[in-house]
Length: 302
Image (tube, rainbow, N blue to C red; front, side, top):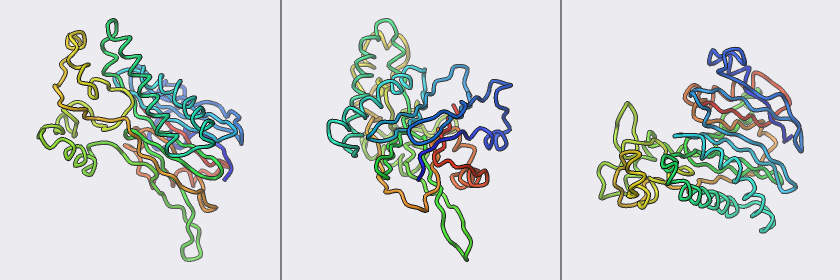
């Protein structure tokens, strides 16, 4: 599986009715080289301030792809963009390669370092306690794919199958959406809080944890994880914290490990902005109908 990345910009323009460059809604990088080929990244900016980040990093131990969909501000996604991959590389080097344990340690270290930043910044920037980021990471090493996820960004694989002597491509979802709009996730959160009948409520047209946030896992969102933050007088002057008996969201990633196979054609890593517009199957079909010698596609809409 050739290690290459390219932009989804042109297919997205057609599907979402957007124009690259001219109206400022979309931009994408030109092709850039990395260890095994080329890559580019497509971005649609939906908010006044771009809160999202994405990156590609290569080393002798593997190639890493990251999509960080921020909310409440850009601080958390920028922090993840700066710290997560160095932690991944450090722990992988120390332990002789990638593993689920290495990935969990890197996510935990990033979360703890961001918590430290929040504690330092709280007196002058109390709002930073409510900033967070979804975090989707793909890593390939020795033809093994690792997908780690917090939040509702998604990784989807396009793979070839033979049917009636014809080649066909189907979509395989490789990540879990940690969004309480999904019934299974909602029940998971409710089961962890049997003494709180309002831990998840339906408000403003969607299900939200404590009426605030849709995702159940993230980096940051410290005030929903640490009781001392929502009790802090400085933060209470900033907003209306909801009293918590225990954390209502977590930074524990779901991790999938998969050996890449010859019939695996390409991967799509994208934030929820893409998946709100396109099904897994439609996105895979778009890529398949726009052939190019590329196997990983990276897209941010947010």
